[in-house]
Length: 225
Image (spheres, rainbow, N blue to C red):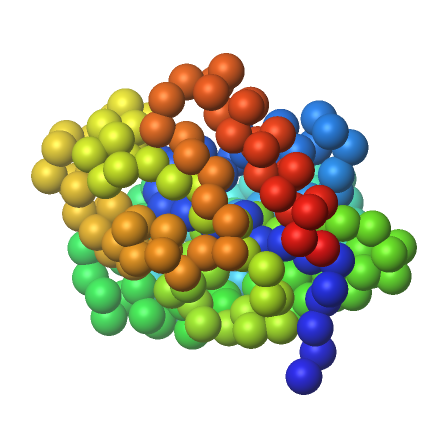
């Protein structure tokens, strides 16, 4: 089985602070594969298929010239000839999210469309970074839920208690408590993720505490690999 010995997955739950951790790691000079960014690009590339499956109301048309420029800036590494055409339309992620987060069947349809393409792009980027022979990180929000990434064997969970996750999602996404709680509970329980992790980065407090936790994590990582 293909393995990436220089890779460490960064995962957690919605609201746990994965992006903040990855930003701190970038500041330290580490390269990051961002599964969310990849998924956004793949989603827009699949705009025509999204329209067929879910309806044209979830698609926003773009100016072709601006879209072509944006596609090269965001996703030039893939070399996919379909990008230019696909980026003339984009998916209204907020509107589509309102649909799929309320209906597990619709969410499953979207995942079936996107996940094979997302996984393939993550693999491609990981192979390129692996060849450099240096430590790098792979930000995969749904690592445990997806069960598609067994080729990564070192996993760090960014942790915050469930109540903290809900509060952050309420603030960040402008949701009420019930809606934020539902988003959090769509994912595997954060305590289960913490138990399954090789490393835990505690982010229940402020940025200063998180910086300390990231330094501790890097030292632990250095000692173990």
